[in-house]
Image (cartoon, rainbow, N blue to C red; front, side):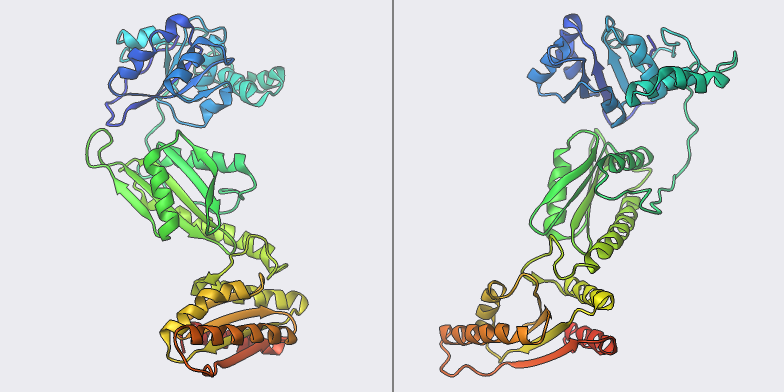
Length: 444
């Protein structure tokens, strides 16, 4: 069994995975959990009735039966049951992952700081890598072994060598291949794992959804309650939320959640326990790259069907969101000449009546209509279809305004609304349409 190589002291607890514990090993779990500086992140076994898995369930620890889960988080140490039937296979897997391993008895006897030894089966790293690929991918072992044969010389390395430190590594997301689309959960998790490895973070999560709620689409590392709270706060407020730990353990490490928004979706990229030497500013840069690539994808899909796009936001829109709908209307018109109109409604100086009117307005419009309120006394409507369609909307709006005016004590008749509008009926209208929208959104 390989022993843990000498490691410098860390301010963060050592992240430990427990694998294939029998009853004798499981009896040591309480002592492991009480040991200072140890954080048991995962318990792995072959089946639900394994002793280690059953005790882990009683202790509320994360459990798995899939060895591929060992690649989804960075572990500082693996404790493998001495009587495990998969011990040799596990040693190869962990060696290929550069994760030191011991028996739980060796660890508790204080042997973790002894010099590293070879695995029980000495073999070149290429053979261990072939074993890893066979374990995780299920490929043909003979073919994998044949590919590894050129590296099986006498000088082939058989022990893990510490990688050279690269000062201030740069993380860049250059394309959708680097940070794939949300439909590819597996690719997203692999991308997150790369980001975690480079930044020294303990956990990374990607959430996406709409204005109402988010859902977790990719995660690397264990659940972090502080991170969960920051994600909710970032989604609610729409601003980055970053906190730094001021005390040990983990002094100086940062937890952050960075929100972003695309044409159709909202999302939050979050990371826990970011290494202060790597810095959290890179995560902010990553969010902008992610937002850009996803927005390009969303716009391409949305422009062909706007304003009938799925998951479109209902109700009042912020000015930026309304501006994006204007751009989509121009793209849709270029595709198939669909007609659009923007109406600017200016109300009299009666704040109470205008507020009442605006409170009821979203319920009186069609699902495809877009509305925003650039000022206290004006409302913008973006409508699709023939000009006759607005006549029905106008009648409802006038009746609603009359009701709002009377409810706040105004005498009949209600003062008239001022309706300015611009239409996008042909390519020659595009410039004026966009100019009017920009002016009205900035209250001009």
